[in-house]
Length: 201
Image 1 (spheres, rainbow, N blue to C red):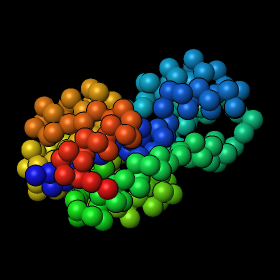
Image 2: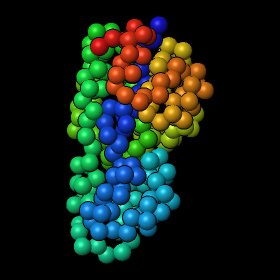
Image 3: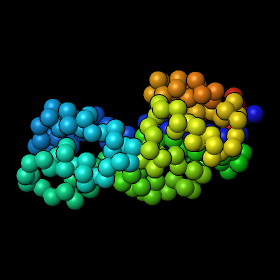
């Protein structure tokens, strides 16, 4: 029996908050050199997502290493505004929670400021019990430590958990930790798979 769902946020419940496509869109909007911006992001993104840097330090390196014609607050507001909900998945998780009482934990790679915004903006604590975010715990998926932390907190055996991620390799990483893993490709297929495990919305 599945006792808990461990779920990614970006790409499953919500749009990806600050992914490659969003950064390209931001570079175009603010008239930045997208190649340079992406190179700088790639150098520092890991330690930002592990919570070792604030968003201000991240942006000092990625965007504000030279004078810009816009304010930092404007850029941060733009970053936050790119997040949108996947309402069908949010409604499915709410329904499963209400009908089965299944525990739901989020495991996400994300900087603290964006994670805080997304959790609050979309009222995720309404149905997600615990948030294991990389910037909160200091480890990023696929590091086994983030899964170990989630398992220690949940106190549920790995085979009693289904892990859902839109990235196949991260779903595989969870599988190597003994969790049942589901590569999320669409609402319809994920809903069907969860139903087969007794988790119907």
